[in-house]
Image 1 (cartoon, rainbow, N blue to C red):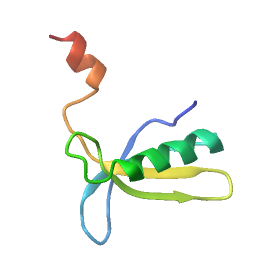
Image 2: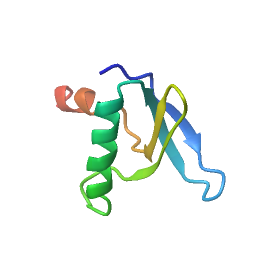
Image 3: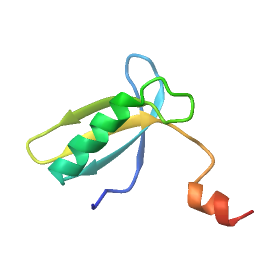
Image 4: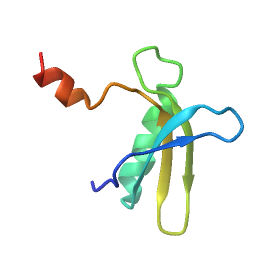
Length: 77
């Protein structure tokens, strides 16, 4: 599945900072959104802020987690 690089955005109403990425693989994106909705409120999972689609892309805004890439944190130990 091909994702664009992560972009940081600020929600206009809540001023919360989020990450957003785009993907054009419909089935994978729909499945990921469904999983994130089921995990809503779980303390160990990133929160889905908003999901939207255009004629050619899906957009997923998720909770911002600062600190860099998880993989870099794991191999840096």
